[in-house]
Amino acid sequence: MARIAVVAGDGIGPEVVAQARKVIDAVVPDVQATEYDLGAARYHRTGEVLPDSVLAELAEHDAILLGAVGDPSVPPGVLERGLLLTLRFAFDQYVNLRPSRLWPGTTGPLGGVKPGEVDLVVVREGTEGLYAGAGGSLHRGTPAEIATEESLNTRHGVERVIRDAFARAERREERKVTLVHKTNVLTHAGSLWARTFADVAAEHPDVTTEYQHVDAAAMFLVTQPQRYDVLVTDNLFGDILTDIAAAVTGGIGLAASGSINPEGAYPSMFEPVHGSAPDIAGRGLADPVAAVLSAALLLDQLGHPEPAARITAAVAAELIGRAPGAPMRTEDVGDRLAAYAAG
Ligand code: NAD
Ligand code: IPM
Ligand code: MN
Image (cartoon, rainbow, N blue to C red):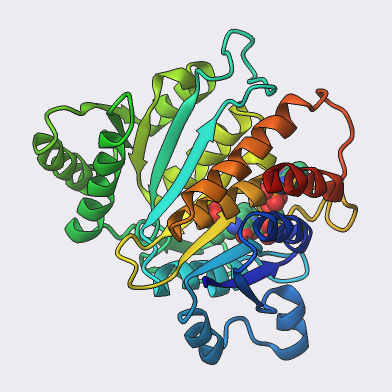
C-alpha cells in the first residue's frame, strides 16, 4: 500500500487537493494519505514553517501531493523558500517535470494550432540555478543599496538533468531535445550547459537536438508551440517558460508537475504549476484539473500506470465537455472526474 503525504497549503491549495484526493481514492482505494498542516496558517499560529521533525516524517512517505504555498499575509519568500524550495532541495528533486499538451476541447491563443499538435515536456532543473545561489544586499534601504543573487550551476547538477531529458526523449515518438539557455550573455553557466548538452547528445545519436536562447524560446512557445518535444533548461528559465506553456495549452488551471528524485532515494513531490491564487481562493472557482493531473503523475511514478491513465482519460472527457468561458465549480469538476475515472 502506498503512503502519501498531503500538503494542501494555502489559498486554493486545499480546494484543489481535496478534488485530487477524491480522484485518487476513486482509482486506487488503498492509498494511505496523511495530511500535514503546513503553510500560512501554521506560520501565523506557531511561527514555524517546516519543523525538522515534520521534514523527517515527510521523508518516510512514498510521495508527496502538494497544493500551493504562499499567502499575501506572509512576507514573500518565507513560505516559498522555507517550505516549497526546502522540500525540493532536501529531497533532491532535481527533475522538475512539467508536461503541456493542447487537449481536445481546449484552444490555444493561436487559432491555427489544433489539439493534439502540442505535446511537449519541460524538464526544468529543480535544485540549482538562481534558486540555490548565494545572495546578499548592502546598504539596504538607502540610495546606495546593492543586491546580488548568484546562479549556482554544477557539472553534476547540469549533467544529471540533461541526462534525464535525453532518457525521456528516447521514450517519446519525436525524440527531440531543445536546450534553452542564454549562452550569449550568461557565458559561464551557459557554457557549462552547452558543453554538457553536447557531451550527453553525443551518446544519443538517434535524438535530434537544438539550442535556443530563452527569449526566442519564450516567443516560439507562444507562436509555434508545436515545434517542441522535450525542453531542458535551468530552474528560473523553466519556471517562467512553464507558465507560458500552460497559458498556450488551455491555462494555468490545467498545468501539472512533478518535482522528482529519479533515484527514489527521497520522495518525489507532485504539485500544480500554479500558486495559491489569493484572488479566487475560498470561492470554489479554482480549476482542480492541474492538481488532479499531478495526482496522475504521482500514481504513475508509484507504479500505477493504469489508474493514472484512467485519470488522464477522465480529464480528456471533462475538457471536451466544457463550454468555453462557462462558469465552473471546483467541486463539480472533481466529482465528474472521480466518477468518470472510477468507470
Ligand atoms: P498563481 O498561479 O497563484 O495565480 C496567477 C493567476 O492564475 C491568478 O489570477 C489566479 O487566479 C489564476 N489561477 C491560478 N491557479 C488557478 C486555478 N487552478 N484555476 C483558475 N485560476 C487559477 O500565481 P501568483 O498570483 O503569482 O502567486 C500567488 C501566490 O502563490 C504567491 O504567494 C506565490 O509565491 C505562490 N506560488 C506558489 C506556487 C506553488 O506552491 N507551487 C506556485 C506559484 C506561485
Ligand atoms: C513554481 C513556483 C515556485 C517556483 C515558487 C513558489 C517558489 O513558482 O512551482 O513554479 O518558482 O519554483
Ligand atoms: Mn512558477
